[in-house]
Image 1 (cartoon, helix red, strand yellow):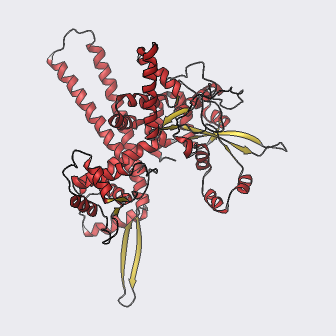
Image 2 (image 1 turned 45 degrees about the vertical axis):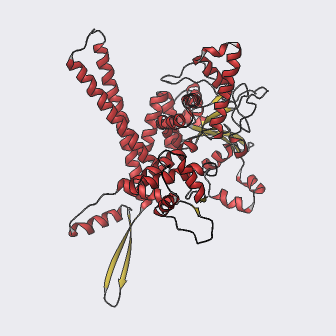
Image 3 (image 1 turned 90 degrees about the vertical axis):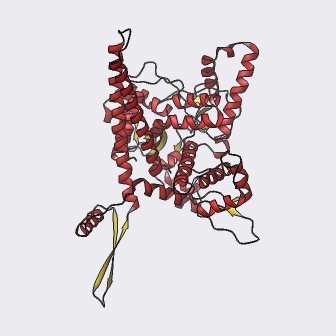
Length: 507
């Protein structure tokens, strides 16, 4: 669960994107945890229809995950199946990073792929046919004969590129069933029992909803024949709301029904979404390269970037602590592909690897290298908040004890009985400090977002005043320029702050 200011930031984002009704439901889930639909209705005092519609929007945009569990019946009644809903705060935060994610895809594959990716960012979940329909709306040439076939093939090719690069993935099952612990335990091995014992209900739900890795990025025949069944008293995402939710600011284009394997829409077409995990991995690589370039030199940054590119197919986890081992020749060949790396020699690449913390292998052994990414991230985090501070000696102990009391420091007393002396050893409690730093960053991000909205309102007011004027005097032009410059500074500050948030939370 997000920190206090993290929740406030998530609530603000949902309110900005989807309106107050959806925001009220999401805030209830963020603050109170996983709830049933009936509990959400009771806590929010909204009508059942409004809660249903809000949950539809949140599921559609990957901000809520539903799952079903078996609960004991009351007064001798048989057990019943209940649908629960859990908020996904990390996915909510990712909404403010959409421009960064879109830029990554655009730089790698161009505008055609970026257009498909942008549609999934805007609408949350789409089938391939819905993506094609969206493309047709923008390109009327698709409506005629041969051009239709050619353009469709190009779109499918671009779609395949995104799936092969893992930028998009099949949506998780919208409502997986979690077996009762005593029944599930009979089917699991001793090793899996130990793992399950440490998992929360929410973690089990996410694991159960995730598609198998073998089909997660598989693009095959996207339309499945069949019909959908009737709904029940819980949220049925076969049923699209017939009325616009009060305050809703985004259009819902697809809502998927219940399924056991993966998410589909009412036509039984497989739904796809953006793979945030891959986007974060690329952002993590970018952050590591930037830090190494600044801390070591540009050559070390080029070599690290080459390692990331060469190992892309083998690295599947966002938070891998080390890169996969690569031969020196492989790293060198990849570095030579970039314009900046063409002048590098094999010896200079080897020296850069040593600068990155690698040890030279023994003579006669194939030179393979692996980079400690965790160390680079730790150094970047420390640099983000470190500063040199000088305090009076008499004040130092007081400050240290206050930090220890607030759980930011660990204290170990080492005594010498013979000399009757005692030495106090202080160590930073990283976990506690990092959590506080992250919460402060969420607070700052929320303040920046609110300031950006305030400046936008003022700019709109100014434009309304100027609307009736045929010409602008110099004072008016200067005022518009200042408003524009202020907006750019605030927007840039927010992007930099979000980079720091990802550094402490996602990397």
